[in-house]
Image: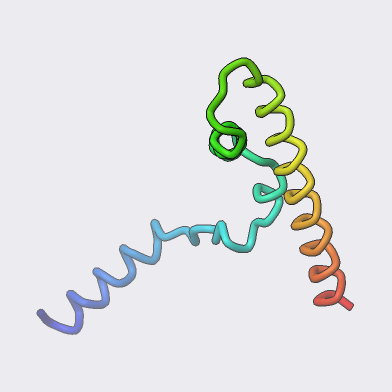
Length: 87
């Protein structure tokens, strides 16, 4: 390939290029637990109490409380780290 052809190819790729935002830098999404996270924790709670039926709602609510508490702690620690980084 000639240097002229390489230059055209490079310019063509630069024109349509747009940076893809890094999701690892976006911590706001980490603060909201997903239904899958809650469902998994509720199932773990169900298993921990012997797999007895009849307390599914209690398991779900406990899982929500636990996960929301952990998510809140993650958000607070991330906010503190962000403040330190900007200071």
